[in-house]
Length: 101
Image 1: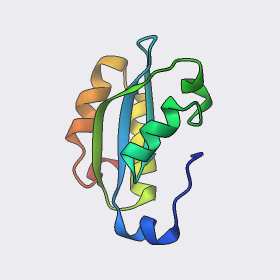
Image 2: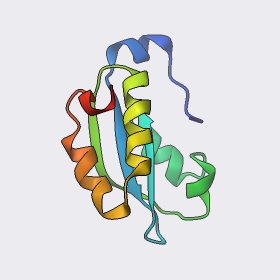
Image 3: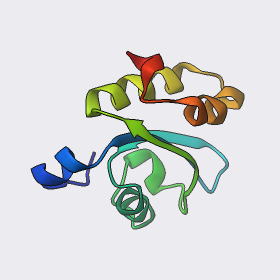
């Protein structure tokens, strides 16, 4: 991720998986521990390369229930393997990222 946070922030915030819809209708999935900051970075053109040419982006769903960055990354990988129509519901269903462990 292009957005850095202090180590103290990592220890106090849960990680989560987010699904954004780009201006062209495609989805972008990622992980963060600060959704507002990450959304602002994407819309400022400082997020992922994929979203830079597809601005603006908006959050479709966010599950901030992952206890660790590792769990969030594992859940993100699962989301990316799903067909488009199943992605939002899967992210909504994440509970402490247990499906990803």
